[in-house]
Length: 215
Image 1 (spheres, rainbow, N blue to C red):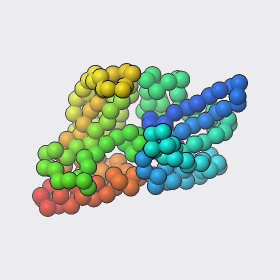
Image 2: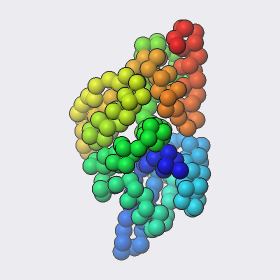
Image 3: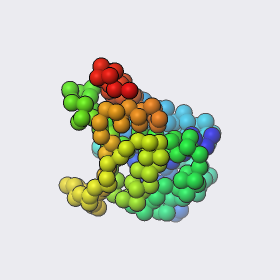
């Protein structure tokens, strides 16, 4: 159960908490372009918390939104996530940082599936040295922690760079990358993904690795 809870909390890095006591609103939302991934996440949430979320299309941004409305579940998730009230100040929960490797890896996987990126090898051809995984957040301290969790699996990460000031962003953002086919395959074998598009990209990179004779 704990790895699945960790996966949910990692996935929330691209989600949001909404609380309005006056109107009795206690809502958690996850956003994604890929509906299939949200359906899988919905099944995990229902298994752990006993309530099935709804999934709707947010036409403003043309993304899918998983919505969980429940004061008891909202209160429980907010507590175990150690959410301080805003994403910019939200670091990785202390119990995850002090848990088993399975729990830590599940958190990283959820974070990667919701907020991380991987070279779009399914769209065009890339050289092996240009294959990469990347993470970007306004919360630098969270990225420092995430990087340490990944490196504990003997996966080499680049330095945390930034701040970058992107158009349309209110706050500066920071990021780090995992470069090259060998390290990306290490990430895939050790941490993995539940995201359909990313699974496909990892398979293409794995085939590339085999053709290059990379272990």
